[in-house]
Image 1 (cartoon, one colour):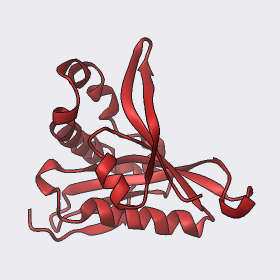
Image 2: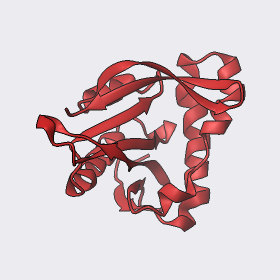
Image 3: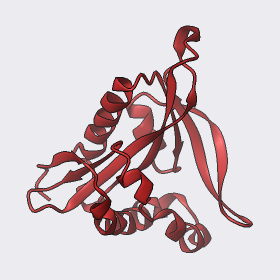
Length: 170
């Protein structure tokens, strides 16, 4: 991987490419922090692109010069709140951020997050929530998120994925 990439908004027809990215990324990057039982049963449930995100205008892709997707991530609006009592400001939920395991440490995740922050702030967002994998906690902390505590995300009846609730902003 060369380190050069472009950011663009995702389109609905990017679904297969984002699925392929998630299928490359999650199993390799999460393996050190999750037991085999989680990797086999729950990671396949996570590693699926969300068509509604791709069509939202709030989901970004990083691609190389050949059009290969190297990273993805976005946000959705999930409620209201804000700093200094500004309860009428939307809250952004960070969604499905991933980097190709062969392209980590090239600034892709950081550029995606800055694009997310810029787009969300243009919509009036002052606070961000994130359900981080155990693996990604240091990354999110590096872009201003603070750990709120552990959480188990239900993915199927009787199956929950261990994650960490994080927040950025007041």
